[in-house]
Length: 293
Image (cartoon, rainbow, N blue to C red):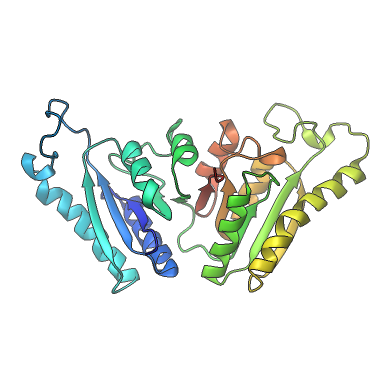
């Protein structure tokens, strides 16, 4: 059986929008949908081996079930007849989602929330979930009902292969074209995040560097085009800074896919200002995919 798509909900408008996206993703995959609601902290005084803590024990059942019922109704509106399960768990949202991700094909969350998920894109929380979750993480943000190509941030790293595979599979599921985008510049460290302008840095041979970057892009994409021949692919080599290039590409995309860690131009993708720019300023949903192993 296909692993479920999980979606974190807290009753906020953002999380309900995430339910719509998660339902569509589950339908595309032929997978069940699991709606997860993390409810604060579990009481610390429960004896080991005792009965599990439940919202019903504290008179909170009507509220939690109301949140889940609204989410379930939204999901059925997107994909009638799909298999849906509910999960109400006492604990921190980050920990709950990380555990749930161990048996999921995809985790989907909104960019803002009311309670447990409100800090998802603040500080180290998003980085932690993106780097330690056991399945790809999709953050729903940007313009409503985005259309266009799936954009893949190519870095040529071994760890980034999982993101390449995911992006091709996602484009095939959506029947959308794929833009394989590789950003390069002449800075000696392509994961450039310091003051100054990497476009003006001195290198021995700019043409040779450009050819090497084109080879990296071609090598990354060619094998997967054979696996997914139905996907129309545009190979896009851009000499630019990483953050503006990613954000600009997201303007005409329906999804941006990037690896959790990379080499070269995207080494810092989930660290510092690069991750903040992508997760806070992209104009469409963003999926972060961890490398295998």
